[in-house]
Length: 522
Image (cartoon, rainbow, N blue to C red; front, side):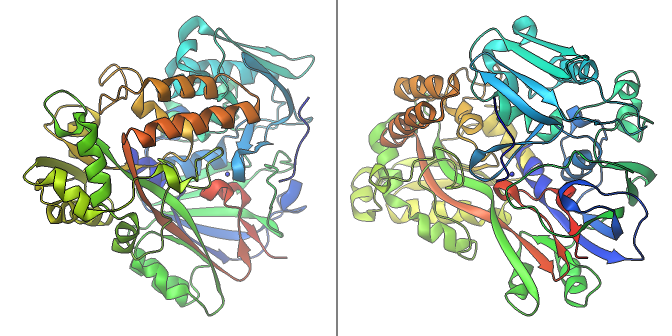
């Protein structure tokens, strides 16, 4: 049995970790904080989000603020810490097999109306998620959709059991996602009201929504007696906020000004304003936000169908130079995910070495249609790739599209493209790997029509075992096959920079800020 170990459209989802600012005001709250964060709630904390809340229903989350506010209101059974470690949230312990898992809920866990959270309520909430959510297939496994997954709750034993028809070793990481946040019975019968605001008694998270001015401001209060805090390896000292006031602020320069003048105590930045905080009473922590790599359209008639051209493209591009385009603060990658991912390949010998002269022998005169999203640094990385390929003799036509157009043309397979700089927000091998296996859009996610049987075999072996040693061994073989075939060209991450003023802290598990862990020093 596991015991608690005290050990974290595409661009819109990536912004889920971008809680833009926080400041302490007012006096302490009388609400109890409990758990690892301290005995009672502390002062009011103001949070500024980069976008407005689009829904309060956890299974329909899609924008930055949805994920942050949803995490505060609806708790998941487990969380994911650095290195992929699974840690307790609502569940205290669990037993896992390749075809399922049984959770034992923590004692005394309640819904937001103070009534006990029962195992059958958890089962009903997860069944709703399995039935409705578009992401359920990646949580329970592609072979376990529909009737392939059975979820039951035993109220007397306090256990929730998930049984799968086919083995799937990524079930626990999937259940750590905030979209699986547990909704109590009042929310399950509320219909569309769950998405439009607070439903009394629906919540399982530490905070309740007590005020909402759509498009402008939200207020959340800490629940009295809440004691189901996540158990990360590094929990900050201090008290949780008694009150959270959330506003919508879109300009990072304005937020940086407020942080420097003492009006706010925490900010998250993706742009150049992060450079203001290298010293002087601030702590800065950088974490990967977007993992960039070059991917190819490998359908017949496109240059990417030829492995020699894929290799030449890799020879023409310098990942270090790509990183410098974004200020050099990212992490040069050795796979399609960054180095924080469990089981990631870090073997540089599997990468094609930069060699522009050799690339020119193959790329001279080759026509390439490069399509990229301008949502990341206004498309500066796309422009670098274009110039690198042009220097190697290729005739490159660049389309620097908005993110929606890029997604339609490349991910939706409705455009004429040869290469793309793919801005992936997933930090897990399994979730990212679905782009290189299976059906093409719209039936699947294999947007480049990759046919790499060795990668597919490794992916299958890695995702159907719960033995970590066997899982990593399979992932190493899978990544080797993908890299040696030139199906992806790893580039570098674009980071988010979290800036804390003294007195405010939070945990950033696996590079993603968890607002539940925001604490104010005693």
